Every structure is written in structure tokens, then in C-alpha cells.
Length: 107
Image (cartoon, rainbow, N blue to C red; front, side):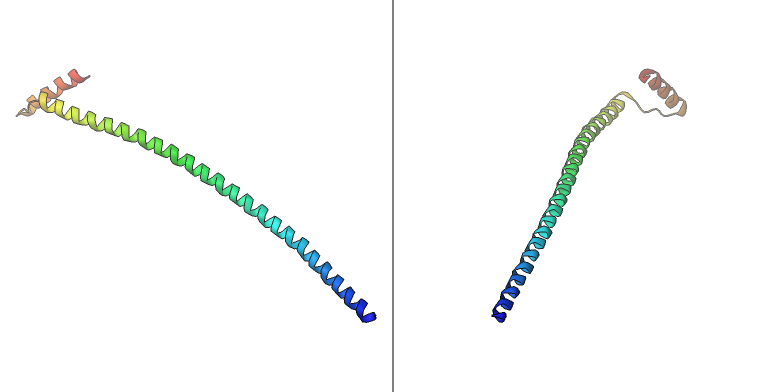
């Protein structure tokens, strides 16, 4: 009988240890899940911030591209206008006079 009770005590001890391990393991798993959830939220927040920054940058790039196209068109128009209006002069005094006329006309 003593051996039988000893075995029962041993089995109860084993069950108790297993229960403690399960409770401890459950808490460890819960903590790991909490940590993973926090990491996922941080990752999601960073991803959303990056996407907003990318959208802003793309919008700025589109504005820059439009302004660049306008500038390029203005330069081409100005070149055509100057080539059509300005006749090349041979001497320096004639060139200075032509420049002065152009300055007065533009300003």
C-alpha cells in the first residue's frame, strides 16, 4: 500500500509540475503574442508613414516635372523668338546698340 500511495503522490507531483509548466508556458506564449502584436503595429505604422511620404514625394515630383516642362517650353519659345527677331551684327558698337535696344524692349 505504501508503494501504491508513493506512486500516487509521484503522479500527482507530475501532474502538478505539468500544470505549472502549462500555466507558465501559456503566459510565455501570451507574452510572445503581445510582443508580436506590438511589433506588427509598429511595422504597420512605419509602412503607412512610408507610403504617405512616398505619395507626397510623388506629388512633388509631378509638380516639378510640370514646372520643368513649362520652363523647357519657355526656353525654346525664347530661343525661337530671339532667332526670329535678332539679326546678327558685325561690329561691337552695333552689337552693344542691339543689346541696349533689346534690354529696353524687354524691361
